[in-house]
Amino acid sequence: MKNGFVFSNGHDLSPRRPSRRQMSWSMASFFRIALPKRSGLIPATIDSKTTADGHARKSQMRENKNESATMTTRLSIALVAVAMVIPAFAQTTPKAPAKSKTQAIPRAADGHPDLQGIWTNVTLTPLERPAEWTGKPTLSEAEAKAFEKHDAETNTIDGNTDGKLLQNAGSAGTGAYNNLFFDRGSELARVDGQKRTSLIVDPPDGKVPRITAAGRARNTAALRNFNSVDNVKNRPLSERCLVGFGSTSGPPMLPVLYNNNYQIVQTPDAVVIMVEMIHDARIVRINGIHPPNNVRQWLGDSTGHWEGDTLVVDTTNFTPDTRFRGSSGNLHVVERFKRVDGSSILYRATMDDPSSFAEPWTVEFPFLATPGPIYEYACHEGNYALDDILGGARKMEAESNKKK
Image 1 (cartoon, rainbow, N blue to C red):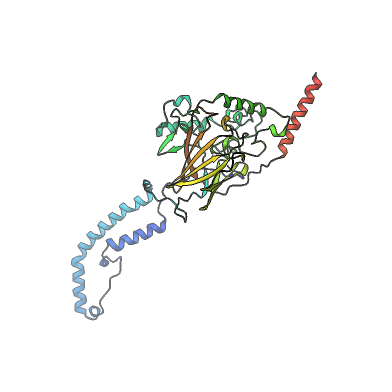
Image 2 (cartoon, rainbow, N blue to C red):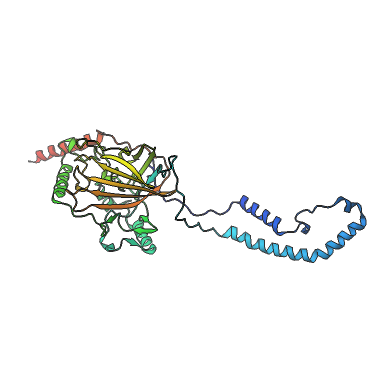
């Protein structure tokens, strides 16, 4: 994001034109190779004995005269070649080389892929596949560009206080956000060279599996608490600055409207994922063991191990209040982090909770390298907004009582 927040733009990976210094070196090298010394452009070495002998000098001159036609021809050829080279440098940009499938990936001192850095999972690709893309897990380049262009032109909130994005953020009619504040990216997620139409890859229809009756009951209770203003503890976890909204803290770590940045720090014994939203920090203990079932945490307990070049993170022991899309405290998430190249990690997460979902389901999308630093997300438990929310509710109740 901008203005005090990290703003995740795409990286300009286009090849650069050669510098003047590079061109000068190339031209000088070309002349040294293409032109004979006696052309006059490169000084020739003259033998001192020859300069001492006048007859030898005359013989040299006759030899040069006989060779003049040859030299002229060579010089003409060289100049034509130079004329062909200069426009190539000045007018064209070399194409970026295609990435090799065996491109080396950064590695830590212990030999495992180095996941460290600052990353963003920002994307226009929705969690679930929209109806207009039913049966189409990917789009052609032309289809993807058309969608991205249409989104940029129409999905704006500047000057529109009742737009869909504001409604989703709970701020319709207030003017609390604008395009500068949001960080949704400008492209659909690309995996294996293809633009995806949903983050969900399994089930194949790109939809969250059927929610069980128990899961629906939990969702209903959460909505009831969302509308409750009687107690601070009934307010949503994100509003209380405990956990980021929309599962941005994870797991699974899903993109939301803004603050989609993460910093990963890695050692042989642990991997720490610092989340921009609510400045949560997930600690993944390599080859660790989960605590007893009665130990519960907001983000669950995460242990990790390496399967080849993929870091596999296993998370259990969630609190019942976390409730990812109606999940219970028995939610089990398995994440996979695979370093694809120098600028991306392929992230894959599978959620399993039989009491909430009819079947396990999986999301997959890239995390892309982004410039840092990540600035502090100044939201803390017990912030003054809670006083405003509860105080406002009491005032509305008092005004309502006066009308009775």
